[in-house]
Length: 480
Ligand code: NAD
Image (cartoon, rainbow, N blue to C red; front, side, top):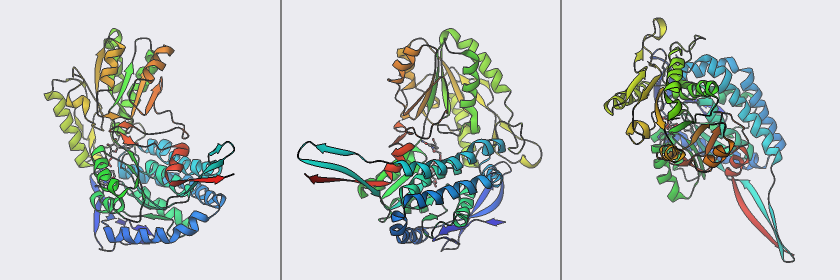
């Protein structure tokens, strides 16, 4: 059985306590690897290595840092097939998705930040005849990066790449549910010639390893993506330590469909937005709000498309949904299907587990599930399910749909479908979401600010914002 190791000071090492956790393939239910059950001693060792590497890395000319990141980007691309298979075996997502989205995006993350860091600028504020101020940005130190299981390498590299490009050294923790591609990335970073200690990866559980990173006095910045509850715990610990915090948290995103939208395109994209990656994308649209005049027509077309989606072995090309990432999450989703029924939801399709024959007979599969007839303020419509379960709801007016859309504690993303440009602009200004897609979904430009309002997070990733996050700003004022 494969044993994953920590990456500390440029070496693959065992956890100090020698303890391991099981790593399960969710499509088969089988343990197929062991992952370090690290503790604060491993985080201490990683932080010491990162601190020791910081003076040299932070003063390395950025062209040289950029070259190292570009090398890592091309090594990821070279190993795309191996990484995609590892991601699918760890996470349960279809292999075609790992190949076409997850791993290519990890390549882009390193490429984007390797080059973005060459094009930074700072501001100057002249005080007429008196003085000139300029903003000096220096790398903040050791960055703590903690990521979730839904888009494992994609989100892990989305943090690590800007941190390294900005001149920080890193102590990172991937989710214990999906550690494999982070492990391979660590090996590739050695091959890319990263100096020891620049990138350190410590595997293990959130409350042990994650919390040791969050509370470590020598880690001044934490970039976290995960659940809103975990974000609360991290804030409560890091806040009083005055750490810099970037929190990308949960979502409960609406897809808003007006009668004047391009009908076919809307249905197709709404299905993709609802069920991509088994609904396990923080940006998935799980509350479909549809103008009443087209509600029945939209419902019929949507359900008809959903029924065509095949669920099963993620290695089989024709399957559009793979396995749910873990057994506890599988059970959580099923409990929400029960809840939706108790709350009076009318099941339009799905609602059952799927048992494929063959190697996936013990995997965690759920049909894409659609409910209607649930009020906007019931738990099913307010809480993040993070699985293949969505609701349909009619609305009559703009005011009503705004109330529904903005009613949850979350504010990550929404998509709005209309051919009325004035309405699109008007609503974009009133929808309380960090990302508003109009007549599209998941169309990403890495330069744009990415993140959520309200309980969906604090701060923004993407573009120069992420590079700036990993720096400390200093105003230098020179009297003329
Ligand atoms: P999670 O919060 O359980 O775990 C995320 C990471 O935090 C894991 O690495 C975990 O080990 C670690 N962790 C857990 N407890 C911790 C603690 N006390 N201290 C420090 N670290 C701890 O989230 P998850 O279940 O892995 O991911 C699903 C959630 O992530 C969903 O809510 C989803 O919406 C959210 N998410 C948000 C975005 C975004 O960009 N806003 C993107 C992807 C996922």
